[in-house]
Image 1 (cartoon, rainbow, N blue to C red):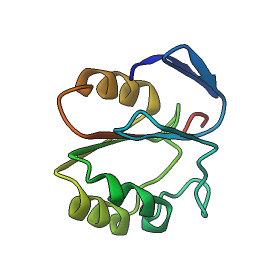
Image 2: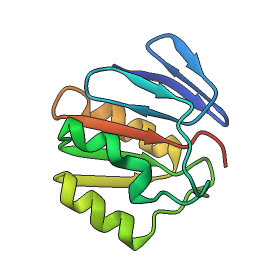
Image 3: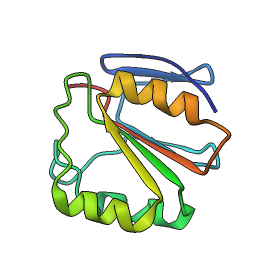
Length: 114
């Protein structure tokens, strides 16, 4: 699974376009329309399903301008469910996600706008 491109509010994955926040699972499934209960704050309750995939690495794209915040309680949660997490603005997170493809059980969480 490769992210072909990202621009503000849009991501193309394997030739298919998405215009809402999304999660990419290690199975290749894309959860389109992913939204957090607190909008621009990523909380542990927003991530319950990812535990089922026992990820090695979770890449978090916080938006074009990094507006999605990841509080300390969420960082602690991520530390307990994966070996490594990487939090970057979405453009950099896309590059990171693509570079890690195939080497580990990888999940991508992407905020596509601000």
